[in-house]
Amino acid sequence: MDKGRVGAMVTKSKRKKFSSLSMTTPGEDRDEAGTPKELYDFICTKLLPEKQFTLDVAASAENTKCDKYFTKKDNGLVQPWDGEYVWCNPPYSNIQGWLEKIWAEVTHTCIAVTVLLRADTGTNWFHEFGPKAQQVIFLTPRVNFIAPSGVVYKGNNIGSVLMVFTGQVNTSHHYLRWKETK
Image 1 (tube, rainbow, N blue to C red):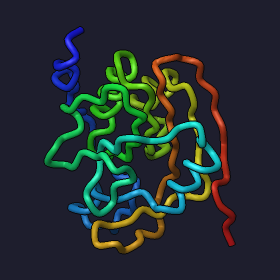
Image 2 (image 1 turned 180 degrees about the vertical axis):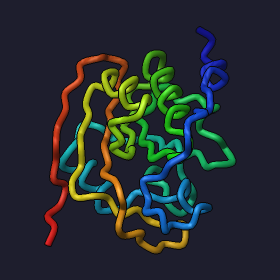
Image 3 (image 1 turned 30 degrees about the horizontal axis):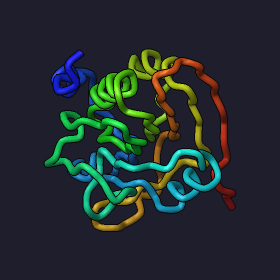
Image 4 (image 1 turned 60 degrees about the horizontal axis):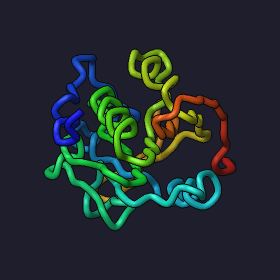
């Protein structure tokens, strides 16, 4: 397959758009919410220390987790991810499209992708791509994402899950308390 065409095969989901953020979150901010530093640091140091992320494919200059990143304007869905260890907290309005891109990349020249998603086990995308992930890690407590303004969104109405893709289907599922709650 022509590597330059990988982005072209990604389709935008026609399913109803949801967000893992509270329904009180302003609509324009839902797809721009960043990963909390505390969670990302936990993933990098305790959970997946063997994965040194080299590219953040769905970021902004304010919330990127890697030195190398793609913004909304760059459109990570059409960029090549060759040879990269990828971190992805995608816009939740197009999870299906991002998972299609992830699978296309890891089955060609991308080394691995760790993606942070809403733990919506009743969706078609979860049932299609969950079994393809090398690891599926359900996180507790719920993640409080960060608004573009830096404000912490509290009261997330659904849990989160990490899926780790390497192109090898050998799924293991874990339930993980990533921090203590009071």
